[in-house]
Amino acid sequence: MRNSNYILVILISIILLINIFPNFGSIKIHKNNSNEINNIYIKQKVHEIIKTINESMIENILRELISIGPRMTSTYGCQKAGEYIINKFNKYNLSVEKRPWEDFGNKFNPGYYKSNNIIGTKQGLDKKDDEVIIFHAHYDTVKDSVGANDDGSGVVGVLAAAYALSKYDFNKTIKFVTFSGEEIGLCGSSYYAKEIYDENLDILVAINADMIGKSNTKEEGKKIRLSYSEDTEWIINAIDKINKSNEKIDIRVSEKYPYDRDSDKGYSDYFGLIRYGYESISVWNSGNDPYANTPEDVFSNVNISYLVNTTRIIAATIAYLADNNNQPPKVTIGCPKKGKIYHQDKIIKNLKTDKTFVINDIWIYPDIKIYNSDIKKIEFYYDGILQETINDIPYAWHLNKNSIGKHKIEVKVYDTLGRTSIDQINIFNFNLLKTK
Image 1 (cartoon, rainbow, N blue to C red):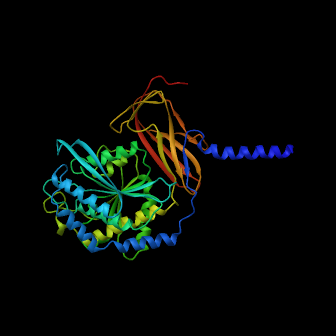
Image 2: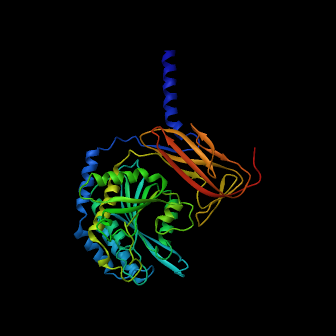
Image 3: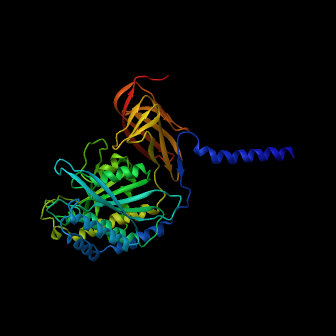
């Protein structure tokens, strides 16, 4: 009887450890234990989505959009374009949001602007999978252009993908986002990036389509260029595999450019998102468009067959990602957060910018999501120099250095399959009272 009691105590202890241990210490580890998605089913779904997107659909949406006229932010044309997009999303049975924003334009477009970001959401089926995929473009134009390629082509891509993908169910949630304010200083997307960061929205990747409808030669018609963040190489590899396995897509990645997260300026709506640490891929024309931001950016400036292909490869990639759980780990810095002032490890003020100020010392806490592997180790860097390597929980590093100024904190995670993920944050640290 006594032995039975001992065994019972041991079993209860093991159960408690299993349930408590993952939440112990300084990290939230989210491990996806769902069954592997049937690859044949994914391929079939992707193939059907590709067939749905055709020249007739693309041409009709583009003609409807540019028939509204110029769509400069805050003008009547921009308002009507927003209403047009809302109507499309409603027809596709998406959940629709109109998110207002207001801001000052850049030095080339001075003044105060008000407008809306329009979002259509296809909710994922897996309630345990809170990751979101974003596909976005900007629906505003410069003052004297209907913006057929810049960025009517991107908006058409978003709407056509939304239509094709809305016919299927996916594990992950997909958001189709159209921004205004891009041409006056990336206003709408910067506002949205801060909104979703403050809401702790978990983004797998945000795909930006800005001018994806122009090819000048037959050779250019088979290429796209990409800009990308550091943890998206596996997605770019997926793009290549999807292209090779589908005869209805004849397009390849010809050039790749890594983003500079420390840059103080950007050239499209990806910028606000990477400033807040999100993973991003931007898709561009393979060649230059001399008519962008001019009155000559009209329907004839767009190569419809090329726009069909760029839209197909993006939609197919989203479909693949939305059901995929065989992916590298993902790390985000949970503390300190952007847009905060910390004193003695506590938030004392929220800011309207993405700047972060730390007074005295602070603990650096990463949040990690893992899928079909385990964590091998975590490295903490300070201004590019390795400070500490941790192999077990709690995964946290105490930053306690004498400092006055700006510093970069980086966290790099390795899983047992050799895959990595990295996140960074720049902080202004004032610490002249280094504790022991």
